[in-house]
Structures are given as structure tokens and as C-alpha cells.
Length: 99
Length: 119
Length: 133
Image (cartoon, rainbow over all chains, first blue to last red; front, side, top):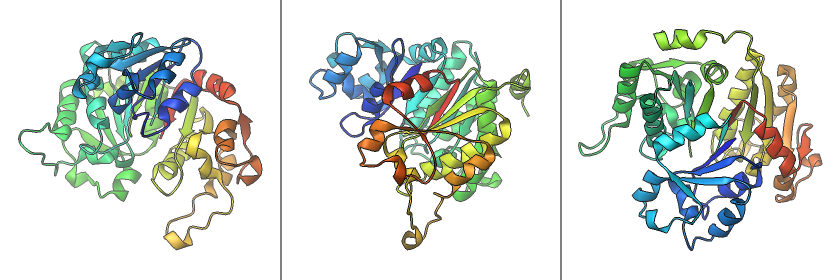
């Protein structure tokens, strides 16, 4: 299953809830304001890092670029473009958007 | 693969419409089909031809219309959510139509994936 | 109706998918809870395997003792009781969300199944379609 998170982790609890409900083998894609969580020094970074033991974390590159955050992405987080976003949706059997 | 989309926020205020559009366009470019985009909640505001963004900004509404024209994407505006927000047939941009919530459930049944974009 | 839609109608007959509606927003502050409920009621007509789950502030949708007179808004909390009549009987609440809000099952207007986070995660993972607000 693909979990899509679009909210800043320092503003809302969407990322936290998504991470509470991931199962092994599922993936989390951070888009829009959620990409800040995948950057060095963010208070959410520790959560992302511990989640990476069980799930792959992805971040949408164009959203990182638009926010000036591309050079700060945490190691282990895979950056994808919209094409990669589409692939993630088709490769997983379902998706849930944590609005 | 058939990918259905739901858009839950209006244009400009939230990034949701932009992300949904770029996702849909890319999916089609990659050879998938996007049979339907369903506009719900404030998402119904994506459908009005009265929208007039500044010249140097993207036109979210026209982009949807073009996607419908070029690729046959069915742009469905929820009737109940639309009526609440003053969206009627006479202000719909090309390619949009007003219909019931059943169209969302149907997209969920008939598409291989349903992706929600909102706030 | 476009050709695309004709394509979509092929093979749609008789398909039963697992639909999950995820409610994570409190009522009244925004319209998501109310309009979300409207989708669930419509989905009943399609004979799908429907579950409704309440996570985070979504559990506030089910609270007893609501009185909306003062804010001049329709009280739709009673509609959750009517779900049974639409054969929508799979209602799940996440325990951690309830605990974090000082709530127990006794505070809720309908009978629900309480799941821990891992159980909720597994239930979500086995769905075909997840619609959330």
C-alpha cells in the first residue's frame, strides 16, 4: 500500500498517523508541504529515519525544488518526479491520502 | 492501468489541484488512462469558467478542460457539493459535467486505482 | 458520454471491492465529515464491501450529546445511527485516537469495533479503494 502525505509534519499530525498505520512493505510518499519532514534538521527527521527500517520513504522532487529543500534531503529517502509518483501508485495495490 | 482521481480542494488556495493535474497529465503521458476526475468538497470550484487568474499565472480550469478535450477525461462535478457552492451548468467550463456522488463510487469500482488529492 | 466512459463500463458489473472511508476530521469546523458521510450513504447503493473508520479527530464525529442549535447548523451526528439501515455496519475506531482524546466507547453514538493501530493498519492494507477526507 502507498501512503501519500501532503501536510507539513510541524503543522499537522498526518505524517505521524500515516507512520502509525504503515505495514511492512508499504511505502510512504511525501508531497507538497510534507516534503519538509524529509530534510536534515527537521524535528520530523527522527521519525522518518526510524520508519525507514520497515518502509521505503519517497519525496516528490518538484515539491522539494519549489521549496528550496532539494539539497537537504535525508539519506535513504528516494526522490521521485511525477513519473515516479505514477509508478508508485501503479506498483502498489492501493493508496491512501492522509489529508 | 485505469487511474481515477478525486480532487477535494478548490484551485489556487491549495496545491491539491496542481498536484492532481500534474499527476493526471503524467499518468496519461506514460500510457495509463485517467477515465474520470471527480471534483468534491471545494474541489467543485475547479469547474467554473468565470475563473480569471492573472496573465502570468497558470489557468487551472483551462488546464482541466484541455485534458478533457485531448484525452477524453470525464470531469465530473458533484451536484450536491456544487449546488452548495453555486456551481451550476451555465458556469461550467468546457469538458466538465455535473453529476451525482455515485460517479465517484463508480470510478472506485471501475478504475484500477483511485487517488485523492486534497488538503 | 465519451468513449472513455464506455471503456470504463466494461466489466464493471458484479464487481465487489473493499471500500474504506477514512474519517480524520472533526465535525463542524470543516465540511469534510458531513460531505464524507454523504459519499458513504451513496456507496450503499453499489453493493460494495464498505468499512468506515474513525481515526485522529474523526472520532469526534461519533460523540454523543451534540447540540448544534447555537451554531445554526444541521446536527448530522444522528445519521451515523442510520448507517445500519443502509447495511453499513463495519465501523471501526482506532484505540490510540480515542485514548488521546479522553474518550471511550461509552461516549460514542453508535456501536463500533475498536482496533489497535496495528489492526487498523492491516485492515487498511487489505482494501481495494481507500477514500479519505
